[in-house]
Length: 358
Image 1 (cartoon, rainbow, N blue to C red):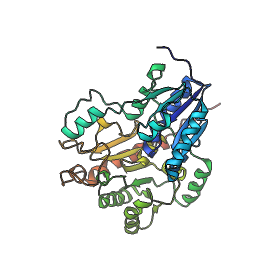
Image 2: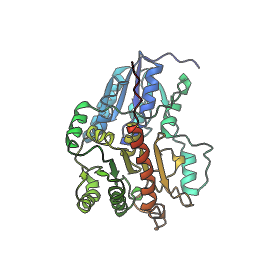
Image 3: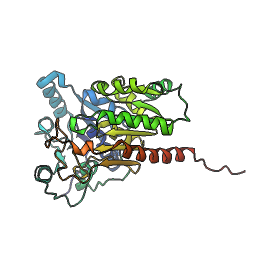
Image 4: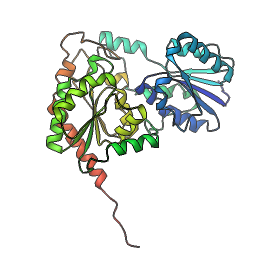
């Protein structure tokens, strides 16, 4: 079936940090395929900073969840009046369906959540995934009828210069001779959080063995984890959890030589900024598609456990009540891996091209 080239395109991904960042390859290849088209993006207001500087977008359409059903209806009216030719629903939930339902003249493209395969893997342990396709590539598969393919360039993020300046000023006192390691000990679900005492041990090892400065990152809720760590570690530690905007968080991550993180939005943000990531995965596995993207990213996981994955998102308690997927990952394993990653990173930064005489 032939499709006309769209002049107005709407992409819907309402939340959350990681999922939104995973749409950035789709936006890039979509813009390249239809360079004259207007591409707009529907996003929740609290995540808008993630997309405000994206050069592939014309307008952000904001959903303020505090306005409830009235706000959703108003946004739907705005979308209907805009006259989109193509709507790409990368969220696929009730709200996104409501926003795109019955749009006159619009072609609707959605991606496959592979819900049957996911259910069988999580609930029965039956693995029908013949290949592991990262989520950002699954999003792009929604556009294959237009001949659009992944370009292999990974995630993107565009930092506001003002946020960069602020973070540079806040880090001006530290010596660049010392590596800066970001640590993100939080996560949206309890089963995705490596024990906080292990992060503390890692931080101590990095300070002792690599003379690293430590930057603690996360949201306001994560301060319950980061504040005791900062108190225990003392000098050379910056506890910025819960104090930064999304743009400032990006600038902070971009300043790091390495980010050590659970499966969080900050992990995906580091990937978008080409900062090496050492990610800790417990209840979820590679087949679900959310492993960090990029050649400098590494994952530590307990691959021997037959009870993984026990969820595709995480949960508040281990279904087996042993939490072995996280407890059996030892700080010494991470410290050794982090040390090697830091050496590679610092080595690549100090390599300079040879000057040739003119």
